[in-house]
Amino acid sequence: MSAAQQDLLQTIDRICEDFCTKAVREAAEEGAWPAGLWQALDEVGVVRAALPETAGGAGIAFEDAMLMLRRTAYHAIPVPLAETMVAGRLLSACGMEVPEGAITVASGDAKRVPWGNQCKHVVRVSGDAVFLHEGFAVSGVEKNLAGEPRAALDFNSHAAKAILKGAEERLLLEGALARSVQMAGALERSLAHALQYAGERVQFGRPIGKFQAVQHLLAVLAGQAAASSAAADAAVEASGEAPDAFAVAVAKSRIGEAAGKGAEIAHQVHGAMGFTREHNLHYSTRRLWSWRDEFGNESFWQIRLGREIAGGGADALWPKLAGL
Image (cartoon, rainbow, N blue to C red; front, side, top):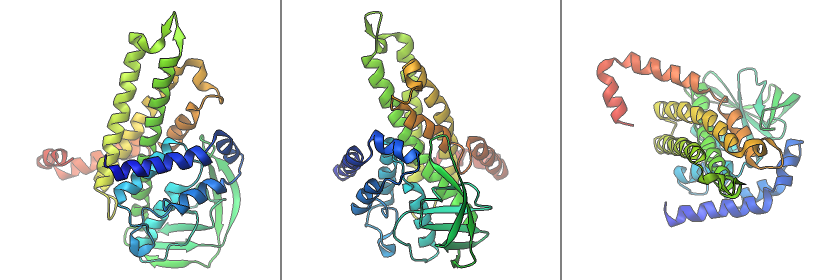
């Protein structure tokens, strides 16, 4: 990792230390908007980091923007940063102006729109059409397992519109890529919590991390986190201009599988402590359980991968694998 990337991560760490406290997370789950956190991210260019400079971006490489998104997921920030980045990439791709502030995305019947009740703008796709809505009504709000709002929206007839070939597919891929990056960050945090707890929790006169059974669990968790990191990095590297369908499918399916196994192991290491709200582990694991099902779960992407590979024929299998 370069010195510049280390600086980016330290910037995110400082912002989260100051503006993403446990009290802020708890208040956000009750419906409060963390204005200070969002403003701090916006002031240093994180909110628009995934945009090219021509669309109002900060001139940051896409890989670095995703690195920052991953770090915010490590800290379990309760704001729609991923959704805003996805929306901005869609609008930029079809030549539309990207508005300021938090933006979310929707398709289909718009019944579970992430943060739909707290965003001023919504980018909605239908077929090849991309709509930018500012006026809409919220008809109901639910929460996912992580306590993040998922809103049902009713749109009026007034919206900016552009055509982007394959807009629905583009939204699916952009969303799956963002969630993959976020899950990689949440898995890193789960591993960090588990390592710290195993080193501090004493049983039978020594830290539980000294016991072989616990060491084995930690090794498996570390392996899942490392595999997720590699899959996310590969997908990001291939998706600078637009998401690479094959790389994103691999990442979302592999990291989704790791999310289930990794969260389970992290809670095993923590024992009963990990299931309390007092411990911070649940901020990461509840997000892993929620995000793995959004923009297609691992089964969805594994089936899609299987069909694509089978459709290419036997001779195309090895070159496909070797190109990963």
